Image (cartoon, rainbow, N blue to C red; front, side, top):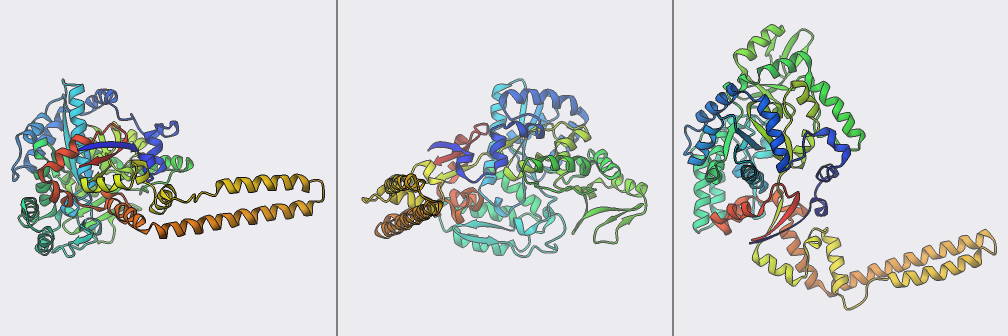
Length: 537
């Protein structure tokens, strides 16, 4: 295995906002606390330890111990859960939806980035302990986003979870009945071999031997990462939600998030950046089995949208969230706040879209008096097999050329290998010099002649452009074998002209590399590098 890096900007797949953040552009600095670095980890510790109480640590560790009761837990994970009671222990966190069979490949990159950063932090500050956290988005509800994954160009989907309306309820509560049909499809696709057997067993035990999506996802993620001490947390927990009650109350009575985020969003948009999320006056859902709906304030009463559930006064609503805090769920705007209340967290690791909405939240954290974590862009990578690497070498494609758009790459390489000079720059320069002489002559006559010279120059330069394109097209036909090989390798590495990590599932690579896959990725991915990684497997 070998690896190389290029800048995120040079890939062409990342927004200006994220590229500017990685460049630490001055205009973005008001929207985050500290840029992620080893030095800033210590500063973040100093801030967080003043905020996070011993009582919260006990609640957190106790809740996690209960969540892990039915799971075969590694010694490393059990140790980490126990260490969370200690005032010298802090977390690095990532989060993700409960995608079927982990969903896109970058699920692995998120968690590996998190694990690797905890290890780097421990090496730098051995007097502290650092625990990698995977936050399961059990309270999300968008079934269409999570009900499928890609395997060898095919979409494998779960179409009908039992007893759940696909547009309502918590994703974590989806009943796993019906996934036998998905398993049957995957079983046929995987074929035979040791690695295929492992994947079949992992899917079967995860989804067919657990009754809901929360337990299934926890099992599969634990199996993949338990040796590294990963701690998986479900925020949909009554005792953890009790710690959230002060925020619930402030959100309802003072519309705190709405005011703070609206101001921040306007500032970001004035800088030319698009808002990722739009705050509501109350950024909370009310959730019971099969239901997840917004809470709306109407004059003196409070109502659950699209239902008959309502409270005629604030006192009645207060009684409800005090007695049943688990029924109150943060939306995308308040979920980060909830996370930072219940975890002694230093850094959140997420994708570009996630970081973009975190930039809208700093002022709301300030209003809730909660330390704002460091924000780290997760590792991104392109995995290249030995066979693919051999093809790329024969085609003389460099890492930078590989990230060109397919049409541009093909034209560039055809020009490069053609035995005919397809570049008409010399002819165009000669033509322009001749017309410059004509223009000097034209200046001695009238304006109409000068206009005629300019028009003729434009016409002839355009004619050369057309001839150049026709010659390029002809050479593409002549070199069709080379063009096809270029097209095929690019399409394989960038499915649907997207990043590999956004389309493919880890199982496709596990089938070939087996138990070496995650250690190989772990060795190559460096969370603080600030670079896109190209991994030759």
